[in-house]
Each structure stands twice: as C-alpha cells, then as structure tokens.
Amino acid sequence: MSHLNYGHLQYFWAVAREGHLTRAAESLHVSQSAVSAQIRRLEDSLGCRLFERVGRRMVLTDAGQRALDHADAIFGIGQRLQRAVQGAGAARQVLRVGALSTLSRNFQLAFLSPVLGRADVTVAIRTGPLPALSRMLGRHQIDVLLANSLPARDDATPWIAERVASQPVNLVGHPARLRQARDWQRLIAEEPLVAPTADSVLRADFDLLTTRLGITPTFAAEVDDMAMLRLLARADVGLGIVPSIVVRDEVASGILVEAAQLPDLHEDFYAISLPREFPHPLVASLTADAKSRLSRGTDARRAGKGASGGRTPRGTRR
Image 1 (cartoon, rainbow, N blue to C red):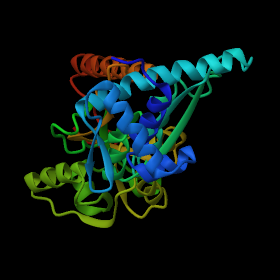
Image 2: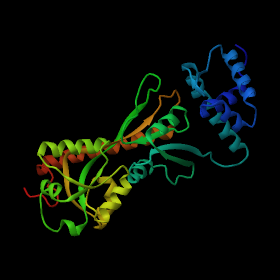
Image 3: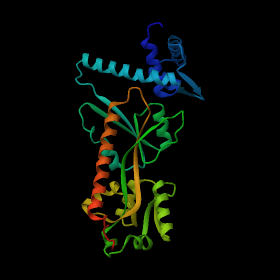
Image 4: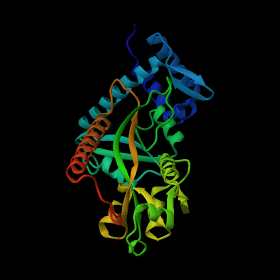
C-alpha cells in the first residue's frame, strides 16, 4: 500500500464530520469537485469505499467508520502538537454535548460538573429535539447525547446507551396549596395538576397509576419542558408531577413543598454515544462517574428502606 496522504485524510475527516460534500467544501474553502477527487484518491489508496451516498448525505461505511476513529486520533494529536510547539500551553480538550431541549438543566449540570471549569476542557452544548440530535451524533457532530428517552436503534445506528441517573417522581406544590394534610391520592383527585405531555414515558406511567386507582385527575397544564413545568408549579397553577432533581433547589429553599413521592414512578436519564475504537476520554470518565453516583444512590435508598420500612412522604397519612 502506498504511503498515506494526510491531505486526503483531512478532506475525508471534514466530510465525515459534516455528513455532506457541500458543507465540507465550504468549511475547507475549496470546490465540491476538489473534495470528491480527494476522497476518491484516499479510497483508491486504502482499497475500500469510505462513504455511501444516501440522497445528498454522505454516510460512512464500516471501513469509513474505522477510518474516522483513526482520523480523530491523528488530528487530535496534531492539534496538541501544534499548540505545544507554538507555546500555547496545555492542550484543551473539547467535549461536544447534545442535550434534549426539554431535559432537566439540573441533571445536565450534575452530569457535566466534573469537567465544568477545568482549565483544559471546553464544553460545547447543543440542544434540540431527539431526532435532530440523533442525526448529529450519527454524523459525529457531538460526542455524547443526554436524554431521558432512547432514539430508535438499528444496525445502521448502533447507539450505546448508558443509564446514568434515575430520579423518583414527586408531587410538589406551593406551600399555600398544601397547608391541609391530605394523602397523595386525595391530592391528585382534588387538586389541578401540572403534568408532562401525554406522549412522554413519565406521563404514560402516571396515567397507568391513576387508572389503576380509579382516579380521574384534572390537568391545569400539560408541558413537554421540565423548566416550564417547574415554573408553573412555582406560580401555583397546580401541583407539579416532576422528577425530584428538577425542583431540588425550590424544595431546598421552601419555594415548593414536596407533598409525596409517587409510587413506582421514576425518570431515567441516559448518556448515548456511538461505539468507537478510540472513545472520547471525557465521555468515558463522565459516564463512569455518573453511574457510580447512581449505584451509590440506589444502595443508599435500599438501605434506608430496610432501616425505616419505607419513606413516608410529607402530607401522607399512614
């Protein structure tokens, strides 16, 4: 095999990251035909196809995916070499994060907290709907996707989904609304509720719970954004059905009161990535750290239940 031409490899790297010939050409300030020619020469040199055309998109083949893993490592080393020689100090790692636009901000901060503020790390966060972020992950435009649901998985998109947090779901409200002690069944039957929209997993679980109990709740508002749900509960529009992490600060300060932890309801959070020969080291360390916290929290909750026989939610009569 002839010696690898790193100029060809850089053109390949740009197309692989953009997923599109035109955008890659624009980023490299060359013509689209020049990019196509360089890709063909690299494929001839390696003896395999690196892309398949799907409409206007350039989709990596299996060989292309392996080539991208090595290209990421090669150009990452090159960037660190350049900074070191030019006296730019320690090389900064870039972590590109995609986060579901409706995802709890508190969860995002908790997951990213080990690297936020580090002198050698730049965190770039993009938010949006799950399909758009899944496409960005598939095109290697983000390194990890944070979500509370999983994208569709098939052989073409072999996501690795790690469950990194699981939060109990609480019934919370303004202190004035919860002055009278009532159990949680009476509360969801008598008070207006602010709940997730009907297409969410959390809402589906809540609807199953109320159906089993024979309760027909009244919904004052249905929202797909946990930040808005929290604000509506603060404004006393109704009792909020939210994961505990969403209203952690409001409960700690007394702005909201935790009326009950709803049985058998929880929300799972995931860190989703693609299998890589050279995994992003920050994604691996953050995921491992979050899973360790999840394991410790699960063990602590089990120990607490074993010692006390179970938690008595505020406002619940035994």
